[in-house]
Length: 225
Image (cartoon, rainbow, N blue to C red; front, side):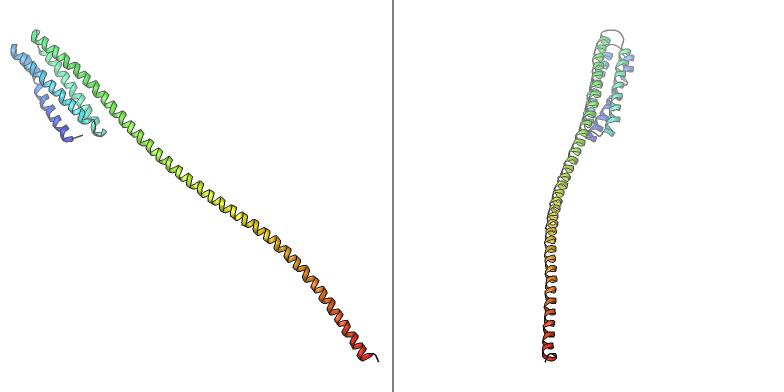
């Protein structure tokens, strides 16, 4: 939205409204051709004011809601003021051909005013619906992004748990192998213990035999004659 363009249209409307709001009194004071001319001028100025209001509506379409909402309300009030002026000038006109022409034109513009008001309401609803749709789309995008991040984290956790399981399997295998090695070591130690005991017994027997032989030799050499 161009704020400069909106302000320009706003000034144009106020200028047109200041001009047409005096015309009902002028119609009431005038007669004949002058009254017809004033009514024609009134119709033209009201038509121009309606076009300016439509331009203001279009300028508000892309405006922030904080600015659009109060200005949309103000535009509806402007249309209501125009409709009131149309009723006033219709009541000020005297019966006759000029009054009938004015009533016909004023009826058309009143109908157009009602349609414009309805279109404005529909446009406001459309803008609100568009904003709601955009907010919903952004919320869905955030949800999808969070879901993707969660999926990525879950994949990393699963991979890490798989690696930890492999490490535990390797540790278990090493423990099994260690247990088998310990069992073989115990068997070897028991065999060595038995051999040591056997060697000690044999050594003791040999020592006893040597002592007996030595004793016999000494006896035979020194005591037996």
